[in-house]
Length: 266
Image 1 (tube, rainbow, N blue to C red):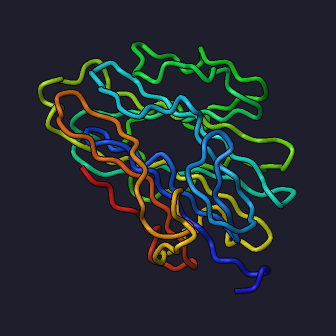
Image 2 (cartoon, one colour; image 1 turned 120 degrees about the vertical axis):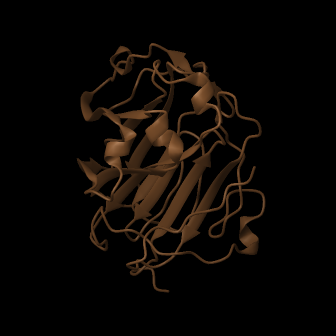
């Protein structure tokens, strides 16, 4: 494949058993996915988007009614001057409706004041506005029942991303205080945050990559260029046993069949 026409890349970070969260589902145009906080995935070739999670991303936690888990994701341009940035949310599972899961997404043209030693545990009575942003802040999605976000709507447009201006996203997922702890303890859900970038070679931030190929030998010891190797990151819902987890990278050309995903394991 020529350097002028690179295959897109897709990455999905699957978190958890109780609330298995796909923190990242990346659709990149002519693309590269790479971490700037903590490496999550690497396509091994130049591209448009660099992406990483804050080092305080929780490994394992238990959510009770009234708890909120947060993740801070940073996106920046690499080997390109600018690109269009967008985000999308998706999910499945009975906990979305029965537990009344809610999500809020904030954007910061700068950095959120979350220290490297921040406590990764769930937060009670969390207020996203209490985490300052060093630049221009926007509430991309106010707290919304996750069920209302399903159905394949248009991506949330985040505007232009420039090489000299990284963007941080703060995703807060809440299990409402009024949820019945006993009732939700047996329910699960899979939620996803997709971050998409497009540039000169891309098909637009809403375009989705197709299924990927298997991993190559060069991927040993780190997340692979392709394939579905797993990196253990998990979130445990209240009352559940066992933590399934995974971060998987799939790469392939854009098709009309949607985003390829990795398989978590419990």
